[in-house]
Length: 522
Image 1: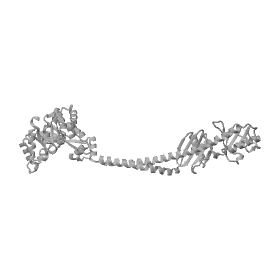
Image 2: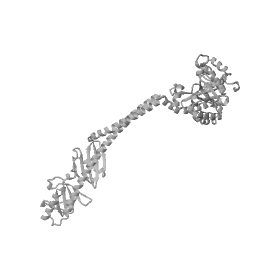
Image 3: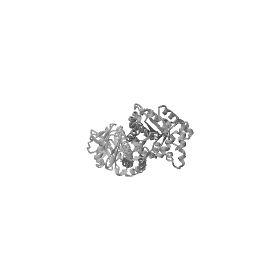
Image 4: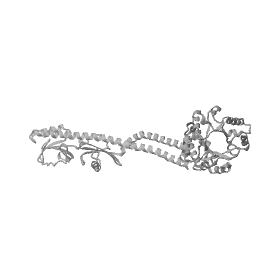
């Protein structure tokens, strides 16, 4: 189930890891394309506003020039000056003099018809009046914009406010206030223009399902630019060519990370990390027997790992991985906790009983485990001498560090044994320099007893060496009575192996121990 869950989760994360950056790349491409196009529209709007402001400024100067004339109204000299102003001011088409609400004369001469001049639709900040929709006879009924100042009014062709070169599919409107449209280009929808003007009185960008809008406000004038969304396609393609490769690289990176993490989680190392977090480890107990009496004097705590699916992983497979991944320390801590929980009652009932706990090389070198043990034993009633510590020869490579740890352990009451002696790196000289309590003969040497194997002659020497150093001896892997008799004959104190019992779960070990304990303990 765990493996399946990891695979399913990894696939989902990988799919999201691909979809998310690609979706983000598409989204950012769209946003950047739209923002870029709106920036272009605002630039065009700026040109339009500049053109409109110039037209109004030029017309305003013409009106002030006319107002400054010191001539009899509508005299021949006055009309000539009005004609000169009209000719020299490109932004206006005509200028007229108004008196008592009636048009008296224009640059074309005296006005014979009675033409009433209505009040202006809008008043600019400079005091000039503005008419949005004049249709004078002089223009042949064409719509004109009027600008008035005191007794004078000019006519302006609306095209002066939108005289900007833009693409044919870009629509434009130049307005003053919220509804006074001066002119439009390419026939924008009046209702849409009015909606935009009503909703935006300053710089703004708006998006619509079918079009893009940009507005620019400056000195009372507003330019509205409208463009079909289809115009984005080319710019969008450019943005996608830029961002999609980045999205693909990000997606590939995420997928690579997911694959790496998945393989790690599915690997033995990954499973070990999870097992440590979930405390999936427990302990079996290999009985230690006094060879001369057959009494069970203790046990070696052996780590076991059962996966959630019930399958067991052999220690020789996961312990090297745990050591390499630096997970052996928390596993050792869990072994200590299991031993105290499983064996506390038995250890309190029989002070001669001991449990041996295997230590890794790191714990022997640093001594970390001693403080862990001290905290774990505090308040339990278990005595330190009932917990033996075992370490393989690899733990004694740094002799000085190992000596410090061993001395500290023995000072606290623990017995320390060297495990699997003869299979590692120890020499007799280094062994002599370590204050050890016991030596364990590796199973490979016990197996050679009574055979012609090359190692058969080594066992007596190991026993003799331990005797010389005043160490207790524990023989591992005893499987036959012949082996037990051989070891007993050479006064080896303790043995363990299948001849007596396999490593047992806690409850079964306690049953075995009660059946094989010393008579004085009954």
